[in-house]
Amino acid sequence: MARISGVDIPREKRVEIALTYIYGVGLTRSQKILASTGVSPDTRVKDLSDADVQKLRAAAETFTLEGDLRRQEGMAMKRLQDIGCLRGRRHRMGLPVRGQRTRTNARTRRGARKTVAGKKK
Image (cartoon, rainbow, N blue to C red):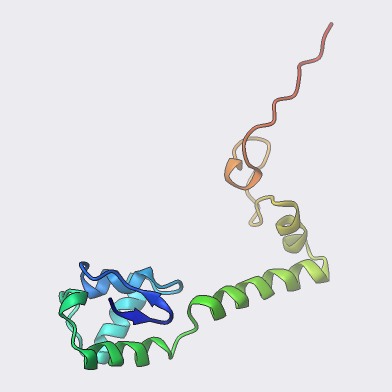
C-alpha cells in the first residue's frame, strides 16, 4: 500500500481516484499532480513502481495537505471568532455562515429538530 502525505491510499483503485483520499486533494489537483509527474492516471496503485510513488510524494508535498491544511482552516475560523465578526459568531453558534435562511432548513448546521410543545388554550 502506497503511503503519501501520511495517508495509505487504496491499492485497487486508479491512481487518479486514490489520490483523492488525501485531505486537500480533489480530482482536479490529483490530475495536476499526475500531469506534473508523468504518471498515467489509469494505472492502478498496486502497479506503481517505487520511483513513481516517490515522484507522487514529492509532487504532493508542494501543496498544503492533511494536518497542515486542517490546522490552517481551524486557525482561520478561530481568527474570525476572536475578532468577533459576524462569520465568527455564526461559526461559534453553529449556524449557517453564508447568509442562508434559518427559519426553515439549515438542519445540517443546526442538528436534529428539538420539538417545542404547542401553546395550550
